[in-house]
Every structure is written in C-alpha cells, then in structure tokens.
Image (cartoon, rainbow, N blue to C red):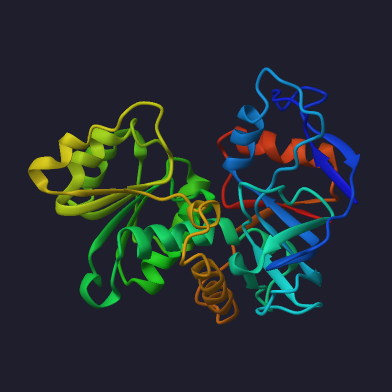
Length: 337
C-alpha cells in the first residue's frame, strides 16, 4: 500500500519532513478492522508528534502518523462483532499504533463509529478526534449534566479551532449552557458565532473582556490553547466550586494552589487515554462516535471542515502541517484520497 511517513523529526519546510513510500498492507486479527481509507484530517497532535517522535535519530522504517480518518471496512478480525465488510466508518485512531496517512489502516472496532450518512468522506474525517475530545471533556471529565447544569456558563478558549468548534456546539445544543468563546480575528469571531457561541471575547485581555461582557465568574472553563499562559486568568474567572479542564498539557507544573480558596476542580482530557491503556470502558468511544454521527445526520451538530486537499502525498501532508503550524486554521483541514 501507499503511505506517507518520516524517518526523522524535521521542520515541515525540510525536503525529507515527509516522504512517500510503499509498505505491506496489514491483515486484521482479533477486534481489528482493516479500513480502506477515503479521507483523513489533520490535527495539532500530528505536527507535535512529527516534531518530537524521531528527534536526533533516524528510524529504520518511516513512521506513519495521522489520527482522523473515514473509509470502508475491507476485512475484519475473527473477534469483530460491531461491523461487517463494506461498512462506512470514521474514527480518531490509537496513538500507540501506525496512523492513517496511508491507503489502509488497522483499527480496533471499539474506537470506531458509523460514518454519518449525510456528509462526505472528507467532512466525516474532520469530525472524530475533535468530537471525542469535546464530548469527553464536557461529559466524562467535568461531568456536565443537562438536568442540573442547564443555563450555567462555560468559557471556551480557542473557540474557532477544531475542538473549540465542536465544544461550542455540544455545550450549547446538548448541555444547554450559555457559551462564551474566545477569538480575536473577524473571521474567527464570526465562526464562533456560527457554531453557536452566545458571546465572543478577545483572549488578549481575557479577564477584562469576560467581566465587561457581564460575567464576574463562569461555571466551567475549557482550555484548548495554553494552560499555563491563561492559568491566572482562568483562576480569576472560575466560579467558586467551578471546574476547569484542559487538553493542552504543560512543560511546567500547573499552579493548582490558586484554585484552593474557591474549592474549584481541574481535569486533564486526553482523547487517547482509553485506547492507550485499553481501559474497561474503551468501547465508550464507539458509542460517542455513533451519537455524534446521529447528531450530524439530524442536523443538530454541523461538521467543521473548512478546507480540503486532494490526494494522499507527502506534498499534501506537508502543506496541511504547515497550515496547522501557522496557528490561523479555522475549523478543520482534510485530505481526500
């Protein structure tokens, strides 16, 4: 099969940052599906892994990355019970296994969902990683309940990004929250409003902007940009007994003591936890993806694809990584095979 990978971690502008190559098509066993990929999408995790996975070394074989895909089940392992050959599926993958920048991929059925019928392969490929992350951070980490939390306030940092775009929709349409999102450019402000944000504020003067919008405190805060850079602002804005959650990670300790007097909570969200540790509830991602698929088909949630490149190639994967690294991407970027 054709694939795109890298042997060493290089800047995206370097000639060998990605290479086209051929490798054996894998065979499914156990709970694995072999998926013939129709489209993939890119995420910040892709370029972070490219930058760090093969630092100061050269791998014997190119590493295949990529964790958002949509395609058709080509073959199944002997323990598969959720899907059959010919099913259209979408998924965000498993960070411990080869990625989707290839013609075929093996994927555990427990983290795969049915493709939404109403949208294209490339639009579907743009949805799994961001949808799982947004769903888990809202409903598994903070444990927001529509019954007890309806009409409470949530502040979403980086509302126009991939995860922010879905989090706004789920927070508004499913949880019934009042949504405040951050954005600074006219096009990103308009995008947040299109996704359903009630209020959009500038992240550059966050505390002042939120308070000027009429909110002394907010019940929940989602950080999708930089936990330490915004930590003081989040600690200031979180309501006593509120909850902050982040996906961004931190090279230095987070000053949790700043939440003590408010008895506020903090959670990390990492979408790959369930697949990386083969948790007992790993199949939850299958259920979440199916719920999101239904929400897309019912028109409750809209897809967030904003740009599509055509053809699996090192050149297109490079172009996609360069776009994400620019920090100006609104919504999601996909590559259609």
